[in-house]
Length: 171
Image (cartoon, rainbow, N blue to C red; front, side, top):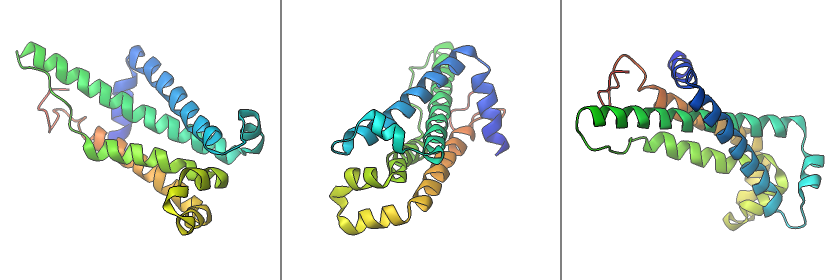
C-alpha cells in the first residue's frame, strides 16, 4: 500500500498531472453517471439524481478517483519513458500494463451494477439469471470493482522504486 501512496505523491506533485487527474476523474464520474441515465429507458438526469443515495454518489466518486489516479500514473510513467528514450536515442515504445489496465476498465464497467435498474439495462444481454445475480450481489460486485481498481493501482505503482524494474529508468 505504501508503494501506491509513493506513486500517487510523486505523480501528483507536478501540477500538470494533478490538474489532468482532476479532469480525468470528473470525466469518468460523468461518463459513469450518464451510462446509467442513457441505458435505462425513460430515465433522465434529474430522475437519476433523485433516486441516487449517498452510497451511490460515494461509489461513483471513488471509482472516478481511482481510475483517474491509475490513468495519471500511467501517463506519468509513459512520459518518463519517452524522455528517457529521447535522451538515449531510442524510439519511444508503449508501456506494458495490460493486467492493470484491463482490471481497471472491467471494474469500471461492472461498477454500474450498483444500481438495480442500470444493471438490468446494461447487462440484459447476459440473461435474466445473470442480471438477478448481479442485482442480488451488487455489494460484492462493488467490493470486487474497488479491489480490481486498487489492484491496477498496485501494479502501476510497482514501477516506483529507485529504478523501474520493467523499463530500467531511474525514477
